[in-house]
Image 1 (cartoon, one colour):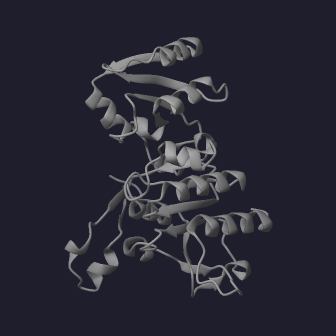
Image 2: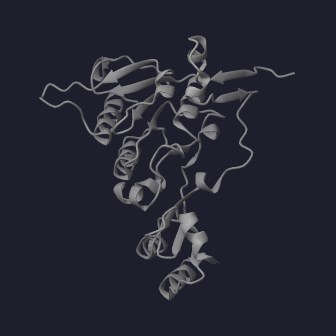
Image 3: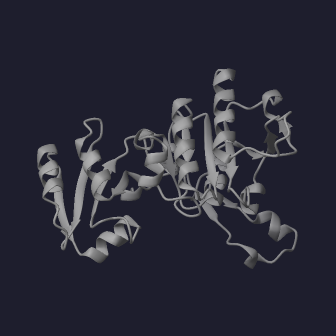
Length: 283
């Protein structure tokens, strides 16, 4: 017996219209009560920094807690080992290939990386599993420029946004470029992780959120729109915009009024406008 068992199919509308299923994957989300997180991936607990200078900076920052440092077995880095000992951080050795894989960067990791604890980062499923739920969240959908992701994290944190959904696939990895663009705020940003933007949109919709896409043209003017208490705002990729799978779950579109002769804003600038409009509203 399954109480409240439901299935969410992101492409249900396609099927109903007779379009081929193969156009995109069907993402199924079964809900049998509160979401239970059985195992949290390290990628949902730590931000990984690589390169000698970023690792040394992380070890020397008293505001950060470094979980571990991993050195390639061919790397000679006495200054890093000394800094790790001083900070009480364990140092592990791994093959050079393994370090490249863990860093996700084969050119700039310099044989060293560190896992830095991100205290406010957690799976989206965990954030939706118990009260209080974040009332307003941002969902990044296909934003691939690290500088944009980093600046959005900084802005959202400054504005007190309850969560920023950063999918593991389709969005720039949370790496040192993102951390640098956020001026270090990424370490304490309210990051929510999931597999894809489509999965996140389905989970948020199922949890009672109204989803709004940000558009350069069309849609209701942001400053005049009446927004529900629980809402998620979707920011699409720099080139393609909001993906079709996510667009099918939107409640509506919002646009930023621009009386000047400019077609659109950079996605991080648009996110800043929205975040501080929510501050203005008293969210």
